[in-house]
Image 1 (cartoon, one colour):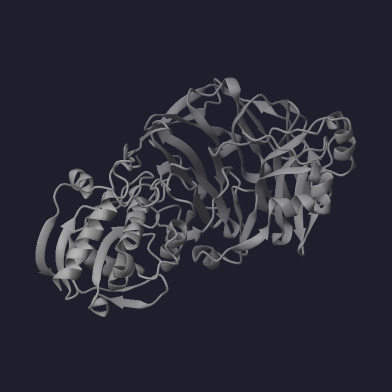
Image 2: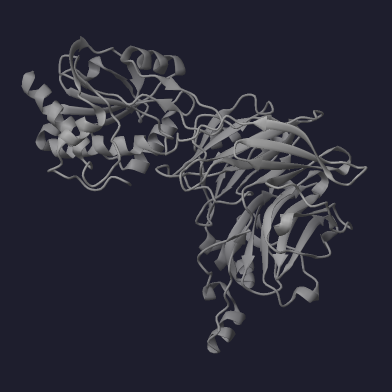
Length: 197
Length: 377
């Protein structure tokens, strides 16, 4: 993988410099009902009581999505014991390659199959389209052998189901300087959400 | 023709020959040759062609495209399945008796598995599928039998199988064999199998594999007979007894199988049938730029220097076509025994046809492909 091991001293300012400032919010998160990588139904309501770090990933993406997944995985590591109160969630961002077989393949590829608080959620094209729309993530099918274009977004949802932060999810250039800065930023927001509840 | 960077040194795969040569300190060496992915194939739905377009591979601006000329039509259409970045290459094969097409996306960059796409309507609509493994970088890495059973040749030389099209779509593949196991089988041992370069189905849906042999004069073609691999290749004329033989391509053909292979500096085609194998006369190979199979077992090869050679089934001899247009990536059989040449320049595909009167190529169609530059970088 392009992302190396966790850099615990990474500066989240780098992630902010890449993405621009995050946006604090206080709005109810859309209450989805989707299917996880084990075929189980998951609703946002079923995650109530935990802080949810959520993003949108294309399981057959060749560039940013694997990097973002690694940053989420690293955020879980950085959270330490607080990890048990945080759910790491991705929603499929591909209207075609969206079956559970693909979320499982992606999890194996990224070493996420054994991460206990990782959920990679999918659903029908209409279910996914509704979630993308509600969270403001544009997903576009491009022609001629290009990958699906989708917005890079991550949200921090507090224990009560309110979105507390919205931030770009592009992990940036993946240089030594930026590695893990995004996961440090996610960790920071997760801790704030945990402390605020 | 692609020369794999690693030289194959497989003493373990040889019988007496390796040991004998090892005693002299000259272990057999083989530089494995494989065909590039640009190719064409013919199914009941039409004629399909795979070509790479766009910009440089180094900057991930090379996008592979799939075109179809529907049966009975004279023009080509872009039908590249959507949803996956295909910078790693496309592999296509006809399935279900030619009534469908299965396409595999080779993984690239951060992707380590191979999405699939199947179409039963000439590329208008696609159904996604999954091969949770790294599909090999050869044009005949996928095969589908009339029954729907599928084979996939992987990058490490292993072969996976799926029982049906539905199983393939659901990612339910299992291992049929590995390169090591096939090399250790009796026929693999006898040929000194160094690499598997193609898979196909023979008569009665028999899984077949073909590759490169260290032992000289032996064509490595194998058939899986009830779980046991057996030698199934042609015997070559004695003139090739001193040449290492490498199969570049293999496809189902009426009544059996067609293969394209190199033997030393010669290029040969061979066809199996009820009375055994028929091997063509040789033609000088040079670098094989692309190759493919047509209806009724015909074979074409693009060679260096814009040379093109074609051959029809059994009894035919290689026929040189007029020098192909610049940028030609693939030939495709046309009606009346003619050929189309598909030439690429950036994002433009030009289709050329041989004109019977002059014997030269005339451009008959241009397709400007909306390459999404920069989307994979």
